[in-house]
Structure formats: structure tokens, C-alpha cells
Image 1 (tube, rainbow, N blue to C red):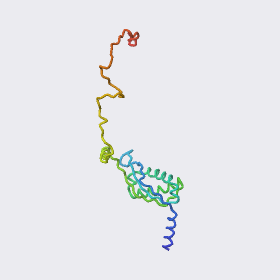
Image 2: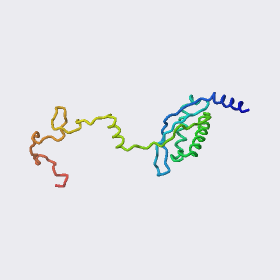
Image 3: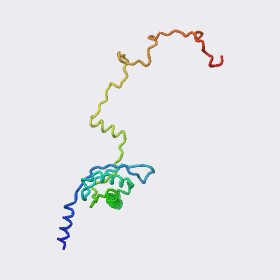
Image 4: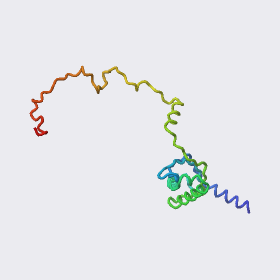
Length: 173
């Protein structure tokens, strides 16, 4: 009897298709602070009939369902089981894709690095160099635009206000 059940199970899984999702990232809400999101990274292996052909539907179902959980709930074993059940039910109901099994390979919260950590990592890998081109130079080039000209270059003469006929009339004079 055990051998017959084993053969049946192997035959069923033999026809099943496997689809692996690696490093899927989604923003989910956190219970800790109001209107705060955390980035979740998950890797899954999905077994089911014609899963590879319906890849877009599977990814859509994953995106919808993972967004309906809190980050802290997804990290518990009960939350993971509820996530699997909801994912399978949603894929069948919405897209008619039969998922036999959902296996969670990894699931973790991605911490947002600080800007100083990013800058130090870039400098450590020598991906950028600090150049002197950003320093201000006093030499003028022919194609430079002069914003504040030197006063000796300007031809200034006084304006004769009497020559302007309408001058001062807007002030009631």
C-alpha cells in the first residue's frame, strides 16, 4: 500500500512544473510605525501545472498577496504558512493557475543603508575618483559665460532722468 501511494505521489509531482523566483523584492507595511514600509526580499520555488507558461500570472499573484501582509507577520512561521495558503488560493481564483506547492527558500527584511555607508562602499571599491575639476578657477576662457563682470570692463554713464518723459508719473507726481 505504501509503495502504491509513493508511486502515485511521484507520478503527480513528475507531471508538475517547477518555477523558481529568486530575490523578489516588495515593499510591505510595518506594524511598528504607522505608514512606514519595509523592503522584503523573498526567493520561492513553486510547483504546479503549467507554472512556467503562466509566469506573469504567478508573479502578479505573488505581488498582490505579499503586499497584503505586514513585514513582521511574514517573518513568523504562522505568517509564512498563511502567506503560502493565500498565494495558492489567489492564483487559482484570480488567474486559474493551479499551484501544488509553494516552497520558501529565503525570506528576509532588507535594511536600507545609510548614505555614508554607500559612499564608503563606493570609495572602497575605487569606483569614483575625486577630481580637481570641481574647484573654482580664476582664469577666464573664451567660451566661459561671465556672470559678474569686472567693473573696469563696463562703460557706465549717468542716466538723464529729465529725458524720460513719463518718469515718476506712476507715483502721482
